[in-house]
Every structure is written in C-alpha cells, then in structure tokens.
Length: 615
Image 1 (cartoon, rainbow, N blue to C red):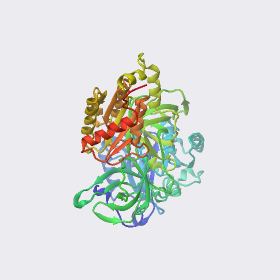
Image 2: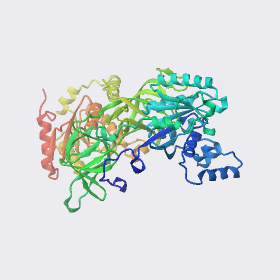
Image 3: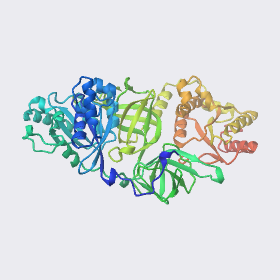
C-alpha cells in the first residue's frame, strides 16, 4: 500500500472545507466563447477570493502584451489558452460565500476538448451552463446539457451571459430561456433558474445589475448558494473496489490483505462482506492502514486494507459489499448511455477495454439501440456504429460478469470509460444490467455449429474405434502448484495405456496472436483460443489436457461453451477457487505424481470416458 492509503482515525470525512464549513463542487459548462471563464473570474474577483495582487499582475501582463484585460485570464493560465482565447483543460479554483466554500471547475467548451469537459463535470454536484445572449443556443450548449444529464448532475442553472451585447433586451433573454427550457425537459433535466448576466461588467454575477431591473431573481452567487448539498456518501451501501491483494510472509504472517478505496458507505470489524461478481463471503477481521495501527471502522473516501477471518480467494477488480445492504447488479450485458470521443467510430465486433470501478476487462459493442444528435435532438435507431461526438444508448457485452450499480443510484460504481488503442475513447453511465437470452459466445457457437462441415465418421464411430469418449480436462490451481508438470505426466500415462491423449500448452494457443495482446497478457483472448482449439481436438475424439492457473467460474463457463458439445472436466490442485462450478476431482498435492495421475485415470474410468469395450 502507498502513503496515500493512510487512514484517519478521526470522525467520518464529510464534504467540508476549512473550519468545518460545507464545500460543493460546481462545474461551469457551455459552448466555446460564451464566457464561462469570465463568469468564474468575476466570481473570484467580486467575492475577494483572489490572492493579493493577482488582478494587478494579470493587468500588467495584458498591458505588456497590448491586450485588453479579461477576467477570464484569471483562469486560463496556460499559454496556449491565453493565445487562443479558449479553455483547453478543466481549471479548478476555490472561493467562498457567506454560506459555503466552492470548488469551481471551469470546463472547456470547444468540441475538440469534450473529453476534458466530461472529466471535469464528472466530479461536480451541480452546474452552471453559460449561453451567449447574442449567439443563442449552440451545438455544445445542447451537448453539454445532455452530458450533464448523463453524468447524473441534477442541479443545473443557466446563465445567459453577454446581455450587454443585446442591449439588455428582456425579449432576447425570454426567447433563449424558452428554447433551452424545452431542451432540458427533453433530456430529463429541469433548470433551477435562468439568470441574465453580463460577466465582463460584473452584472448579476455577485452584485445586481441596474441595467436589468426587470429581472427579480437571484444572482449567480445566490443561485449557487441555493443548490442543495449532495447526500453524504457515508449513508449509501458499502462499495469498495478491490485494488489489489497483498500477502506478507515475515514473522509467520500468512494473512491476505485486501486493499482498496471505499467509494461509499462504511465498514467495521465484524461486518459480513460479499465480493461481487464471485459471490464469495467472509467476515472482516481487521481494518488497517499503511504505517498506522488497526482501527475499528473506516469510511467513504479512505484507502484501507482489510483482513478476513476466512481466507477466501478474491481477485483484483471485485467489489466488496456488506451483507444486509442493497447489493450491486452483476452480469455480462450492460445497457448504457455512452458518449464517444474516439477518432475512429465505435463498431460492433471490435475489442475495447472497459474500466468500471476497479474492473479492467475486454468489452464489445453488442447493439446500438439509438443514437442521439445532441445538436438537434434527432435520433437514429438503425446505426451499426457510434461516430465521434455521438451520444448513444447501447448494449455492451463482456466475457466475464461485471459488478456495478445503476448510475442514478451510486454514480461512483455506475460510471465507466472505454479504452481504445491505450486512449480513453468514450465513457458513459450504466442504466441497466439485463440478463440476455443468449450471449455473444452462445451466438458464435450456434453460427459455428451451423456452418461446420462434418465428415461421415460420427462421434459414436470414434468412440467404438478409440474405446474412449472425448473430453477436455482442465487442470487448475495456483501458479506454483506444479500443475503443468502433473498434466504432462497424465498425458504420458494415458499414452502408455494406448489412449489418444494430448497435452496442450496454453501458450501454444498464442501462435499468430497480435503482439500487443501477447505482451499485455490478455488472458481472456488466450482462453477463448483454448476453447476453440479444444473443440477441434475433442471433435476428433481425443482427451485433451490443458492447464489454466487460477481459473475462475466465468472463464470455465466460456471455455465450456466454446468446447461444446464435448464435456469439460475440471481437476483442481490445492486451494479451491471456484464457487459455482465444482471440480470433478480435487487433489491437495501432486508432488506424489504417480498416485495423483492414477486418481485422475480412475475418475475418467468411473465416469466412462475410458472404456474397456463399447457396445
């Protein structure tokens, strides 16, 4: 564990600023050049939140560069931003009102930096969307509003800026308010107010405008103070994505320490916990930190280590939850609202990587339900791919089950990103985890069987000739359990008894595979190939033997489906790691190789895979 994992033994953390005051994260969004950074700069300047001499320094820089002073320059500190007059990255700044402290996230409005806008908005509890009174509602005004809805930001106010450029005309304000109100209603949002403002002049940002006495509503600052504080993450069900499992062997310490950061809820010694998607259960024995004494309780926001009374095997990426609380959804299919930012479209059948909570696993686009053009709200239900900057409702599928929550319930475990070519290419929220009738593997097997060209030699004829029934025998256990040596000995023993057996080294299935997948160790692709190759061997009537260290239930299910219609048999060596799929044979130790091999052979005879005669 790192020094970032240090536990605090004080009271539960809350969303607080200095001196125990409330703190709120607010994102400022909108189309490019509509004045977002100027709004933020005015909030900082007019509330006295800037360091002494900051405004004078920026004014002097502007004088030297022969440029007019802009409050936006208080935020746009990067040279590229000041030169081009746009916000590139999400800037964070702090100011306070009499009610609370604020973290303001100034998100970029240019479409090319949409990824940065999403990154900023994802951390916000509320948002101010800025619209230029002269330009009116633009493409990114709609797109940012829709993305705010997708990200679960339910508190939105609209600042109609640059009213001075339209002569403070109330009709211009009312027209934009009517148009954008209808849009927000369409995407499931309701604005908590429309504020006419002239940020450059400081009107209706912190102080009221004498030029818009027809407006009697709150200023931008008063609107911010009117936002409700987000419910505490402590009051939600426990969610702890497992970051890693550590084991220390000094001084006879054989405990496993499950490490991770608590996203929501709280955890105490003695709590019964369940890990998803495996479903394994245990009880918390201790809660520990790095270089700190054990404590009795930990809370949302803390990085901790947990030891368990029953030493169960859990994997990185699983989700620790508490028994008796609402549990996450699990499945291989995710219904999602997704926005795509990749340069290449997202297409069916292409492999991507899903990052959700602590899980990192391959994912495929299974179906495009609808694609929304956020600029004009038109939808298309017949699309085969998702283009750049599209917002889509779609179905994603993984080979192994995913544990997650609906984003509206627990955003921390209901949001995800999609990786393509080592870059973040998209992101979205989970809206449902349906249970499909058929998975992509099932569909693949059905298509393969339909197209398979078979000879006149039936499986029954092969059984009669070979005096054996074909099977795939998976030998599994820890990586240091000696399974490979044992599996090879099993092949030699069966061969010596004139049986058709073959040991397939799992690395052999990587022949011809993409070099990147080999170097990154993409286990699922290796196992998929194992299932396909196994189908060939077993269809030919052989007993195929392969070793798969630390195989889990989902991996076995995939291999078993790909190997159909031939049987899969599991021999587990050492510690048991399976929950749903029980092995046909469990062997504690294979150091006595001959004895272990004879036990497997006896099992094959007892289950009628090795026959002395055939009728």
